[in-house]
Length: 468
Image 1 (cartoon, rainbow, N blue to C red):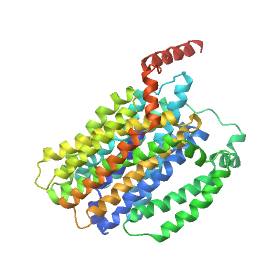
Image 2 (image 1 turned 90 degrees about the vertical axis):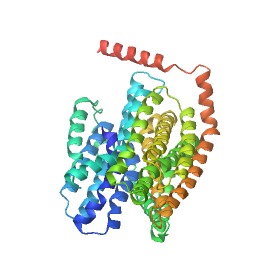
Image 3 (image 1 turned 60 degrees about the horizontal axis):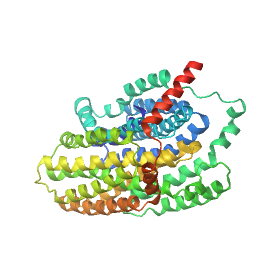
Image 4 (image 1 turned 135 degrees about the vertical axis):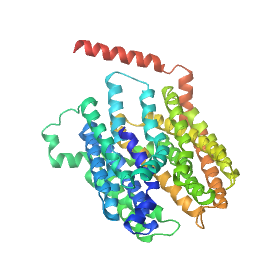
């Protein structure tokens, strides 16, 4: 439930922007800050929450995040101006960012406790569904809520959901180990989480995201701030024995870098469909906001249905190749769509991208679990989501470029060419990845059987409970 809050909040606002502009008497273009603010907060907060979870405990950080989302829902629901709504979106972005990295830390520690060697595919599949498939649910949910109760419920919906999640977390999530008295001191915590590194990373990423979201116009101030913040941050992190952003470890782990790039490029395709095609359906095809959202709902359903069985098998290379091929096929399908195409053709194209969404998220998420150092799984998982947001932001920039003169068939066809190029890049990053090929060979020559691993883990847990 916690991991689903971020993607749903990312997309649910799309249906509320026009009513917000009308009610608050601001230009429709000004409401774009409600989208960018959550992206920005999430891109920075994901790895930060992961680092905090590693040091202070995942349950503590997750509960803190849920409280922030609850507060953001209330601030936004009662907000009287665009500034209050922007603050609410930032709170929601920071709060929802805690769920995924905290979950990965909990899962990795739990697997270690029961001597599980293979990734717990069923659990990771649930995370994949919550983290990606639910993004397509945002527009139809938003359309129904805004249509029935008004735009404030795009914020208020977080209140009952977070209260339920809070009760569930307090009741069922394992408590974190108590912190030693020395570990609770401000100086010790600041040093262990590398506060300067976090602040430098946050400043750098904020400037970079502002620069990217301003394209095609060049924001030289944002670029200058990025360079000015990034240079001392890199110098500081290279000198730390336990840095927030371990540049040396990341540079040495090229497999992890390729995983990040694959996920970013795949999400360029998925979110171009979610947002770009939505604009086209409304402006060129004449569908209402609710109709456009409902037409994309099957995409989320396909993604959810495929995620769990794929994840349970702990496959990496196969799903990633399928993801790239589906992205190429779907991009070619976009090229065939026109404003006179029947709704079923639009649904079929979106279904193909549902395959891309499921296969890429499952494959890359499993790769992150396998490649991340156990003591850095939170930060590494957070960076995985950060790169996903770079893909989402890139899709927004691409959409603004191809639809510069309006959401037309010509712009949609230009979008298809860009997505074909992204699909080719994903295919190359997967097909020629020697690390993935070696994992495939290991699996064929006697890697631990996942079912046996689960059985052994269950037996180990039963033994521990009996001793207790």
